Amino acid sequence: MHIAHILYRFDIGGLENVVAQLIDHLPNDRFDHAIISLTEVTDFKHRIRHPRVTFHALHKKPGKDPAVWFRLWRLLRRLQPDLVHTCNLAAMEAVLPARLAGVGRVIHAEHGRDSYDPCGTNRKYLLLRRLLAPFVDGFVPVSAELQAWLTDRVGVPPGKVHLIMNGVTLPEPIPRQPSAKGETIIGTVGRMWSIKDHPNLVHAFFRLCQLAPERKLRLMIVGDGPERPAVQGLIDRLGLAGRVHITGWRADAREQMTHFDLFVLSSLAEGTPLTILEAMAAGLPVVATRVGGVPDLVVAGQTGALAPPGDSDALARAMLPYLDPQLAACHGAAGRARVAERFSLTAMVAAYRLLFEG
Image 1 (cartoon, rainbow, N blue to C red):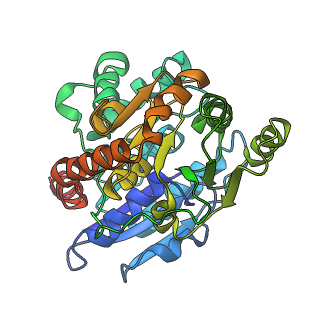
Image 2: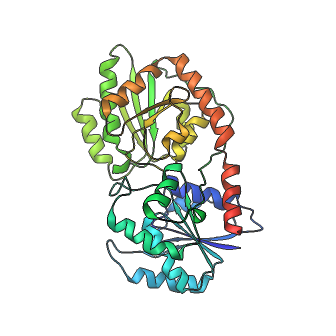
Image 3: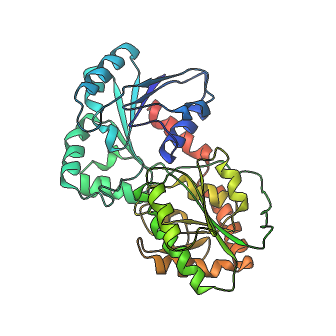
């Protein structure tokens, strides 16, 4: 079976990680794959180990570029995939060239919304999804919140919606690596763009330092992206340059978590964030904003805490109890057990295979 996965850009990110994991864990003798990026394919492609994957960049221009759909149609005519798998709104318009190219089945996945429409209420985008929905055989939301939104707001028939939660592998337990300076290290991992709201996290950390002036605290931001200069400027203005460190992209992001005592995510919108699952799998307590599918993962008072989005004081106060190492260890262990029980990579891949072969 030949599957063409269509994304806006194939680069470091949660969505791209899911696609890469799918390709590597679906049976090699049953599936071949093509990754089609409407814009560019980056070196992230080297993370895929499957022996038969082709990569195609269509170099879409910024803004409207109708010619990209002709290039896509021509490529699909040549590849003749059995199924097209589009990801998020930016790639959803690809369903029409796919149908015109004779592709028999189309699956569209919604992994989360962007900063220009975090609540999914933009009328133009809702209309676009409604117009394209009849050309899609199945929709995959990655959270219960997205599932309800697809049926209630977009109007997709419930029978066409298949909830598949993201999943991760459970690494061998790695002991926390205590800071040589006796610091408590709060960390986050993710692309630095507006939807992740890193400024809120920096403000919350500044407030936490005020709430616990006697503690040695450090914030570690693992990631890079267009918001990095603005975030670094905020760090400097708040006088936090010695306590907040931005590492940039790290291929060993999961290993970096072994240095964390607490994982925090400050997003304005999310699907089912892999970074939270990976932090829980690593045995870390998680404090996050109550958005999208996050409450499906983090059980407040058991594996971490939730705070309203955009409220730095509330986020700081949610972090404060986890300066207690015993509470952090207890909730971290409960989070790891929750991942093992409900969010395995094996279950996610099996669900996609069933849908793809259906």
